[in-house]
Image (cartoon, rainbow, N blue to C red; front, side):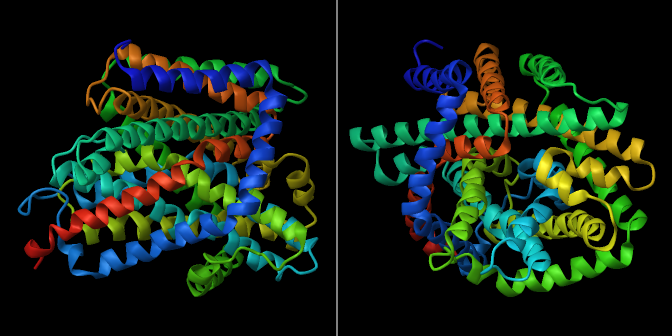
Length: 497
């Protein structure tokens, strides 16, 4: 462990961020907010151009003759059935965020757009913007990262490291090794900070769910820290044993609960209204998603620009923060798939689920806001973490559905932390497929500390700014990986039929 410079530097870097946040939470939040604002103001065009470029590359790869290349030997068959593969995809890049933002995000955008004179019609645009944040652009970031790792790992025999494509394409030289080492470090930091934010978001929501479930109020920070402590205890034990299959079962269980919850809302809620919202959102999304990927709101009011930075840009870098972690997982389960199968499965299927999910929860929220006297918009203004539970509390079987959300959220967080600690341990031990337990525990502890920092920050906006600060440098790494991948494809040109 102590003979590995990357591991030591990675632990020290993330540990320093955690200690800083614990000692001076306000200072870290203020600095991250200021730096992210500067970067978003000057580099908004670059971030949007990057994610749109990745989408264009993805479409080209899927339609080109390179789409028939397999991620492995030419005669290799997929390791998992298509159904199992797609099910695991859902649990990889989605999770607690779906439960947290299902109804809350569309309503939050609705409030913001309603107050802006230059904004388009509020309700339909709010749902479209939510889908844009969770749709093909997000999954393209995951897909490209996973595709590069899978291609170099399964077809070219490289270790599952971010730096592997760089070393393979540009040779084993001092400069190349230095750049690769730095890329691995940036990937580790981005993943660690991104997971810390997800822990905080999950704890905030679980707290609201427990309060709603048991009729509690004014619990303050005590309940938050109790939930956080239980969460840490729940994920520490799995880090000491080989429970990868068990983790997959837990992830799929959480996803099954979420799917059943969506169907329940659709049937028990205003079905005609929800189906109308889903239908309209499908047309709005696919009719505008490509062009919206190039929008930077440069010629709009400053409030619109501020909203754009706080939401769209933050989301894009959040997905980039998770890209190394989710990419490795997706790559691991995709051996034997063709590039075309891989891209269509990873991008289109989860996007379709997102449309159904946010169309269902978002439309249910809009029905409460626009067709009833329920003060749901006041809930959005006061405590966004409670919106999902407020919607469920005004539907049949509220106790059962609220308990289901709490249970699913808890499972999503535990499985994410365990999987992330494993991936971080693998990254920091030269791609070892069986990293030492002490390394996994070290990362588990640091992820918990970073999660606590995010919790102490007290609000989601601060959490998002800290995540953005950690993920922004990885934008350049992602582009470098695409260059390496495209260069490597040239050598495959002769074998493509």
